[in-house]
Amino acid sequence: MEYVIPAGIAVLLLIIIFANIVIVPQATEYVVEMLGKYRTTWSAGLHVKIPFLEKVAKKITIKEQVLDTPPQPVITKDNVTMQIDSIVYFHVFDSKLFAYGAVDPIFALGNLSATTLRNIVGELSLDETLTSRDTINTRLTSTLDVATDRWGIKVTRVELKNIIPPTEIQNAMEKEMKAERDRRQTVLEAEGHRQAVITRAEGDRQAMILAAEGERDARIARAEGEAKAVLLAKQAEADGLKALKEAAADAAVLELKRYESLIKMADGKASKIIIPTDAVRLVNQNTLFSETTGLGNVTQPGEDDPEEAKEDPCCERFDH
Image (cartoon, rainbow, N blue to C red; front, top):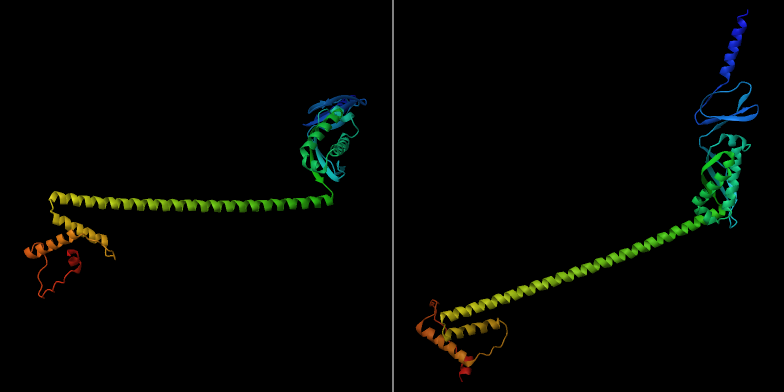
C-alpha cells in the first residue's frame, strides 16, 4: 500500500508536466501571462509553462493578413457622393502591443482606414479621385502605418478596390466616353482619308515624273539615232567623193552625179527643180556619145521597133 501512493504521485506529476508542455507553430506567437500580468512572448518551438501560475493569454499570427473593408460613402470636394471600398495588407510585428494596445485591433484598423479614406477623398474632386488611385493608396498607406504602430501592426499596402460613382454620374461618364470615341473615330477617318489623298497624289506625281523621264529618254535616243544616221550618210557621201577623187573621174561623171543628186532631192514629189543650162548640155552630149559609141549601153536590143524619140521641149527651150 505504501508503494501505491508514490506511483500515483508520479503519474500525476507526469500528467501535469505533459499538460504544461506547449508547442508554438511556425509564424505564430503566444503571449504568456503570470498571475494576470504579462510575462513573455513565446515564438515558434517547444515551451513549458509553470503550472497554475502561467497561462497563454493570446495566440497571434505574424503572417501578413488582408482586411477587406466594405464600401464606404465618401463625398468629394465638388460634393459628389460615391462608394469606395479598400483592401489593407498588414502584419503584426509586436505581439505584446497587438494584445494590449487595443481591444480589437483589426476592427480599429478597419474604422481608421474608412475615416482616413474620407479625409483624403474629401480634398479631391471627382475627376482627381478617378485618376489619382496611386496617390490615394500612398497617402492611405503612410497614414495608417504611422497610426497603427502603437497597436503592433505594420501596414504594408493599401489598394482601392472599387470606386462607384452615382448612377447619373455614370451615365454622364458613359456619354462623354462615347462622344470621345466618336471624336477619335472621326479624327482617324479624316487622317486616313488625308493620307490616302496624299499617297494618291504622290503616286500620280511619281508616274508623271517617270513618264516625262521616259519621253525624254526616247527623244534623246531618237535624236542620237538621227544624228548617227546623218553622220553615217555624210560619211558615206564623203567616202564616195573620196573614191571619185581617187578614181580621177572626169567632168562628165561628176555632172552625172550631180544629176543623180537632183533626182534624189525631188524624191518623187511634186517639186520644181531649176537645172542650169550647161548641165543640160553636158548630159545631152554624154547621151549622144553613149549612143554613138555604144559604151555604157547594157540594154539588149529588143525585137520590137523602138519608138521614135520625142523632142524635149525643156531642152530646146534652154538651148534657145
